[in-house]
Image (tube, rainbow, N blue to C red; front, top):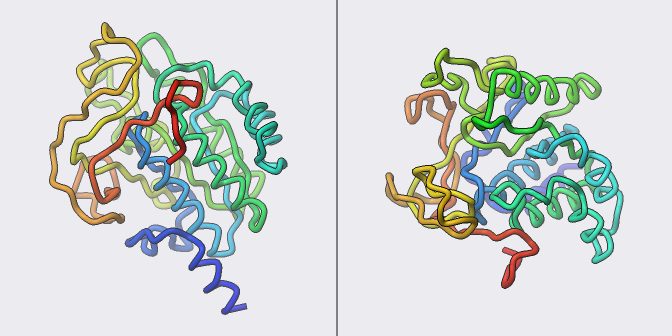
Length: 268
């Protein structure tokens, strides 16, 4: 048994600092991202792999709406071949042209699919339709309910979800009038580890610039650097950024990931 666990651990990409995240008390890990990069979905896939080798079932949440759930189920049961990917890409979620449905997201789902062949892993679509202002108390509550409801059906499971950093913020949307809790703040605090990302700059794929200017359309935008590059891994320390239990680094600056249908798209 020990040899099998060591072999499985070796199969997961190295993610320093993941051990303290995956304690027996942790039932939810929210990986907050800036949509549209190559590297951030890869971290979420690595967290799922590390969670799976602890022996617990994994519920992996993606920011898709429930009308794509049947496509996710079919993909998990598939061989991951060309036909399976084509069917997955025909799901409603992929009509979104921005950073939630990129080649990197497809690669992440393929990693989760492969993980599910050896471990107990379920993919769930846990989002609702974004509002005109991006989110709302109702949307945040629905996201949290979807994650907790999935775990209620499998109480020994650990939930790993990739979501926009705002949804992963335990303090919520404090600048809103009136302020309201994000999805992370609606999950059991003692059972939830919420992570945000280091900000060393690079690029992301989106339909608006970091300032919200959408006049340039959907393309790769520069992400302003705010912090130095540090080695890849996770640092748990709530003092690093308000609303989060820690930060993760991808070990470099970010690379934009196009939607799979965009010309020139390549897997990571």
